[in-house]
Amino acid sequence: MTIKKICCIGAGYVGGPTCSVIALKCPEIIVTVVDKCKERIAQWNSDRLPIYEPGLDDVVEKCRGKNLFFSTDIERAIEEADLIFISVNTPTKTFGHGNGKAADLKYVESAARMIAQIATSNKIVVEKSTVPVRAAESIMNILNANHKPGVEYQILSNPEFLAEGTAINDLINADRVLIGGANTPGGQSAIEELCQVYEHWIPRKNILTTNTWSSELSKLAANAFLAQKISSINALSAICEATGADISEVAVAVGMDKRIGKEFLQASVGFGGSCFKKDILNLVYISECLNLPAVAAYWQQVIDMNEYQKTRFSAGVIESLFNTVTDKKITILGFAFKKNTGDTRESPAIHVAKTLLDEGAILHIYDPKVEESQIIEDLSMDHVPDLKHKVKIYPDAYSATKNTHAIVLCTEWDEFMQLDYERIYSEMTKPAYIFDGRKILQHDRLQKIGFIVQTIGKKLTR
Ligand code: NAD
Image (cartoon, rainbow, N blue to C red; front, side, top):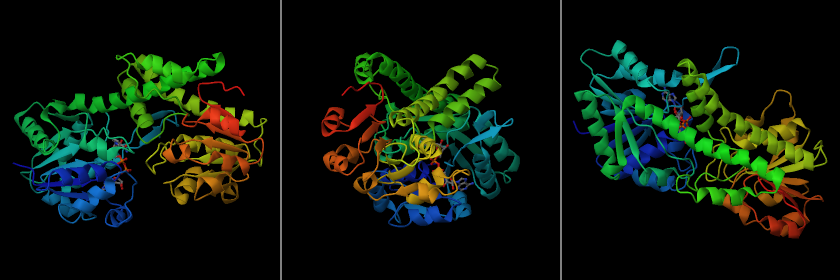
């Protein structure tokens, strides 16, 4: 069989961009991305896509209506496809009176059940979602227990390594594509089919094939390693602030060692995004289930360090502002969890903003890509009923900073480096503070203008 039609269940941050690039690179394959959310599909079919991702609009425009389709007709797309990606969300669920956390596979399960109910011909089913190790076994059990007569399934694991904000580039120039499958003739031939799809643009040497469980675990491991690097540099940033060392200098010195590498050594207010915390919690849960408490504790510490960094940064803001922010206007610059995305899932800005709100501050928030409704939803707290009076969203950085006491920079958007800080300073309440949670601003220059500047991992003296 050569793959002629692909269906992707889940039109989110992964399913949408991934399938758009497959459609771009494989013009002879019909790719249909389906979702149960009508609004999301309507947006994919409009000029305003549901997610912001540099380069995505161009790719979608080139392919949509030719070999790329976005639809709510899940049944038809499943029935017609040779290969089905499951790219649904895999959130974290809490159990045991709030003490335990694990991946909630209810959406994966429901996708598998839909496939089994609908399919009348053989399918290759591919886990694109990030799942715990051996999730493919559960999917296979569901498919085999519910399949229509004569229908056979092959299950592959093909985790996605794209990063939001650079997704299109990451997909087109992937470091590697990982495909895991069963060591059976059927499993190996399914791997080969998927390899042939990627080989349209990825060199064969960059396509790695493994057994299913290695592939599933590698995705969790890759995110855990990346997050661990951030937590390591953030842990050192606290030592820098207390001793006079400068974390940027330490990062260069450490990163020049090829064995360590210079990427992901940027100290900050902490990591966010829907994946790092969730995937590590997943690893912690698996370790606990396997009765490996030391392994669980090791990875848990990466998350705990990240929480500590967000708390430490927020406390530093309050402490600097004479230990009280009650009724003080404070600007939050950036609300997305990183630049070049409108995604706020697990954004450190939420933690910082909620802490300041709890202490009575009035927040002026500006982010180039995050919608007002999203910010209000993220900040809603039962004990702050008058949120609309406490939080104001602005259309640009200048109006957001006017008459405020302090700027708290939470996202590293390029435009924040190019602002006219003389103008901003002249319109702020004095003394005017900047807390640079991403270390992207020119601190000396800001100090010369008159700002009191604080950042991560370096004590700034005036
Ligand atoms: P998302 O929430 O943006 O999108 C998931 C979509 O699946 C939603 O639109 C939802 O409506 C849809 N969906 C859920 N159940 C469905 C069903 N039964 N039928 C049809 N549609 C259904 O999630 P995402 O960020 O795209 O992540 C998807 C998976 O990819 C997750 O497992 C995540 O961990 C993994 N992942 C995410 C990233 C990232 O940067 N976001 C990177 C790599 C891997």
